[in-house]
Length: 274
Ligand code: SIN
Image (cartoon, rainbow, N blue to C red; front, side, top):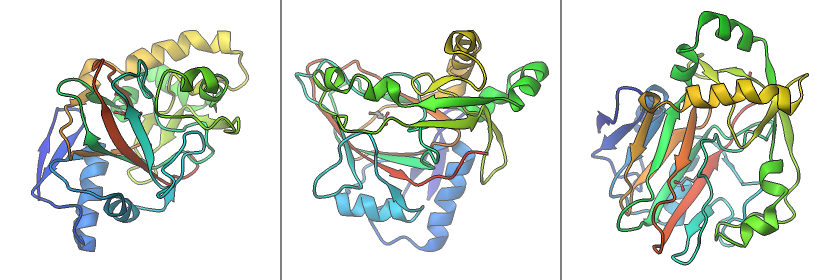
């Protein structure tokens, strides 16, 4: 397999590989290494049935099921991410890390493109290790001792209204979930220090009100999504993105009015952030 970096900061395409085939353990280990280095990896021209996407995902860990979005009846491991041509809204169009309101947010997510618009519908990722690294020593020191409350209120409080304008459906019985996480996470496998806050799910710093927290949080959101920390992926039918959810943000671009986009997402079980 051949690895082609997308930018100097994050993302790489892995070429010459068919991920629907029975890959040797050594190839899976190589893919994992590329993922740890580049934080999001992309495969092109893959022909994946739901079963084959599930089988590939399982090589990297147990699958976690979305606690807030509906999943496919026949394949509960898969969360359909769909925008119909008549829909106005999508999910994911703010910079975010998946499901940080959980005690154990997913380790990674695999998103497979089944139908894409003729133009638009790109996804962007940002490198949260670099985001932390670029802060001043004083700010780093301060953040190292802080924790933040993450919550899914943003999604669940308005489930009915949100479901009325988009096809990726929230479960209306989704539980409200809160978790306390370190603001600076140490990556399980690389030990890299990573900024671990995101706009939709981080509610406030521990011991502070939301109003008190927002100025610093806003600064951190801006600092972590600077263009030089990001990559932007132009999908084709059959592309698959696999991101390390422990150290990235991502953003789905809603710029394809009147066209349909259909993706299948699978998330891999993570660990308690430390
Ligand atoms: C997501 O936020 O997981 C969806 C990303 C996308 O649709 O590109």
